[in-house]
Image 1: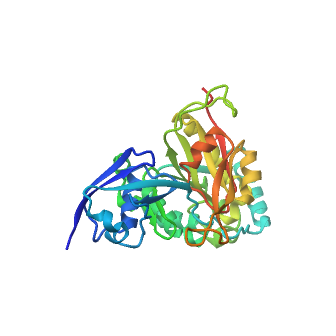
Image 2: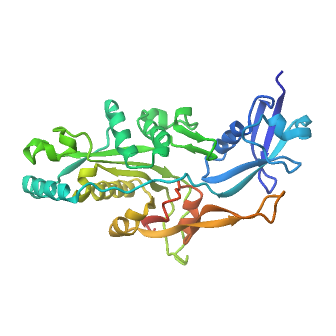
Image 3: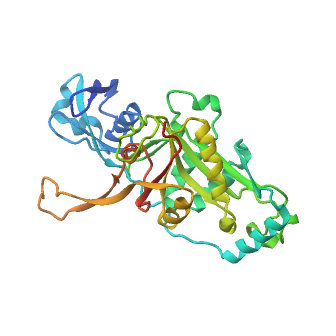
Length: 362
């Protein structure tokens, strides 16, 4: 039998942040309620937990009535939302494998000989729905297998019509949910650009050298990105210098075809992305960089470190306060921009550096 209640969500300071009416506390689980709270709060990257007035933490897997206990008799029910350390979504890449550089060198020489001073690649901002599976595969192959569903949700969101992305409430298919990770992430603002060769492959090099022999490759590279709103800027006397207010462009995933790592595809994509970000009024571009790219590729593009991942020890629980500590990965900001990114960005356990390039200082 349904038991309908109104639920008020309050901050630790006691301010009401959300209200949900007619919630069936006998069937709605703690996880379903937490996802609603995450949406109401704008999908923060911080970890969230809900606590009753009796200081009981709501269990994700149980119906609310079972977790709330005696407090379930109240109407409205008041739950406190507690923000924890920034959520980290596992490993971004389980391994790093570069295909033989010799292939890239041969192709590079052939491309330069064919194209001369002309660009070897062109950026495609208009997406072909028939190629959605191909770009999913390109990005998924460059990342850890566990991220497959997350990437598919983000790419699917990027392929939505522009009229749909303008809606204030994100569509269900654009929100990635993983109860085991405690993750509820909105990808409705995602955009996707691809990079393709600017001429026919067969005129450049033997087809056997390209893309496993495919004479008509689809993508040389791709970048999946979104805008983070709310950066207030930094004053000239700030420790890390002046920065203009405005959105920050977050690079979620950048992938290059394995045969083309030596040809500057990623640098070409990022240069054009930064130019467009400046035109859109973005204050900066940021990315959670994997170690193999972080210190070389991003530094070469002019990116600086604004935050680093650290591990903190969690104290034992109430039943065993002196027990062995568990380690949790969180982000340690080094600048005011880093502090902002801590609350907004998608983070991974193997991305020790959050790097950013400031585009506007005033």
